[in-house]
Amino acid sequence: MFSRRMLIIIGVALFVAINLIVITMTSRQTLPVSGPEKFFITLTAPFQLLVQKTISFTTGIWQTYFATVQAVKENIVLKKQLALAQQIKNRNQELAKENARLKKFVDFTASVPDTYVAARVIGRDPSPWFKTIMIDKGSAHGLEKTAPVIVSEGIVGQIVTVSSKFSRVLLITDRNSAVDALVQNTRARGMVKGGHDDTCVFVYALRKDDIQPGEMIVSSGLDQIFPKGLKIGRILDVKKEHSQLFQDIIIQTSVDFDTLEEVLVYKK
Image (cartoon, rainbow, N blue to C red; front, side, top):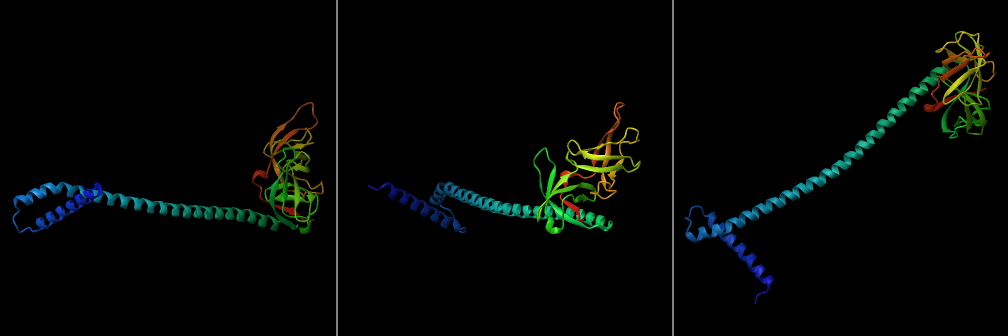
């Protein structure tokens, strides 16, 4: 008795032999086709068609698979290139913005005779009770306590703590801050102190003084800390109570403290 494996081998060999005979006979186009040949052709043609379709289908699958794998690899490479290009673009934008800010500093320092030291903001006080920033310059760069800190838009604050390479700056929006100031147009005197959020209040302005919203408040220079004429902010609201000697005035600071990155420190 033949084993099952042997029967399969014999069957495959017979199938291949029949296909070879049919191909040989059908290739002789000049010879007439006899009855047995027609029988063999009829018998084997469906199997040949099935084999051909199977081979074509398998070839198509492999081609699609390799094309998909290649597309995935190319997609990964393109994503990396796009990410790198985006990083370069973002870096260029940051450099352009930084150059614009530094140009404003250069233009500002060129317009005043005093000496200023440029510094970067490297930290902010997370406490809600104190509004301070840390800068990367200190006594080694000639900075001292109470030195005024400014930008081209106006007053930032004053140094309250100095180390060799770092300093802490008290912002004018802090409740402990005070700047002697006046209204730029009417010259009405008062004091700017820290208020709520990023606003300040202009206190000790007499009720008789004509002060209107939109007017600019500048430093008076009388506190011997901030130079005269530096911008502090514009008046947002003015309230006059008949029972009070002074007006209630709220100021929007000229400096945007949320976007502060570089500052200038007045070097005495």
